[in-house]
Image 1 (cartoon, protein in one colour):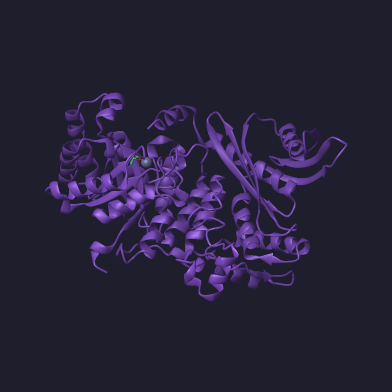
Image 2 (cartoon, rainbow, N blue to C red):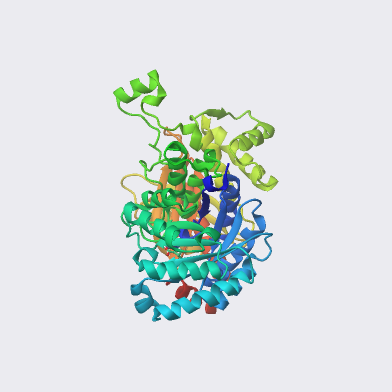
Length: 524
Ligand code: KIV
Ligand code: ZN
């Protein structure tokens, strides 16, 4: 494969994606995601914005230590403090990238930065050079690039490359451009910037007009060779270009876009589910590539065509993105060894013994309750074990009884382990879930806003497991808890408790001074 045919995939799920209102990920979840992304074959992983908070710093640092193939990257504004913090977080990795950015559009320079174009120009030389002295892998972005004067952009890009940037990223920060215009921007840079051959051009398209993927592909066809994107397209406002869509478009229409990414597409479905679980953002049913209905054929004519020849209505196979036929997997007589083999076949090759043991225990309990156990059930159990079995958990559900139905007010009896103390409470509520959440509140008094409560059936049938997601908010910080159980109410209690445990951890880890700093930083 000649170099010019390689399109680098730069994932920013844990940086731009985490900037989606309500999407927050704990350190453990980010590490779990990073491992899957590494396996997926993502070239560069933007793990966070280290100066934004101690949590971001810690996450970038931890991720840079676990990645085996992907290059870790951190974001920094044009400020030596930002760049130093980024370097400190990344320096343990054998290779890492510092991504520094400044706005170049007249609107942003005047109203956001209060700087003249000359001042911004001078800042590029100073800060890209500074970053380059810390690593030879520097990426520079001209924020609000698609609303920047083209001659000015050419000058700034030339200077950034001269100062040491090896990747030049052109963000469509507000999702304003259209494919024909973005093509022109990339072509102009390639034709007019004299040293452009010394850098790779990159796209970073937001989806405000629903054009992020189309614009990214237009950029690639015009000569860019890196796409910045996120799993499920999460990100600021309407999100970023969806990784799974750009990758599958390049793969499926390779006749028109003869490029290669290093992505193992059979892991796309797993990555999508993981990001959705962790953020609590559901994937819409008709979402391209990873939606529940993306490969479902409902109409009789389509089904008939599919039976005769799959190509009639299928442009890519479900298997190519990791969607397997729902398969009956195991029963209550299956042993530990078979269970472990099954986990490996589902892509969980490097789980710790503790997690496997915990998931196996849950599998045995489930097998007693549920007649048929499918791959999806096993995946839900493992994800649940990864999220819930944190030894540092402050709150653990010991028992729950719920009285629901017509007539009587709904009531919950709960016993909870609160920091090692066993406590019980009974509460009535406006529905069983309300009664459960009130019990938790009376046993562990707290004041958070419930932002999201969501239930999904893992498989078909009335005995299916339910996965419940709960998102809570406290002083601008959000956490998501998830749990699966055949009993929706037990899953609801565990999901709420998981969200609270994460919030407690977040409180402990964020010093008050840094909190203020974080809020300021998030205003980028
Ligand atoms: O959208 C944007 O402009 C960004 C930059 C920080 C690259 O996310
Ligand atoms: Zn962005």
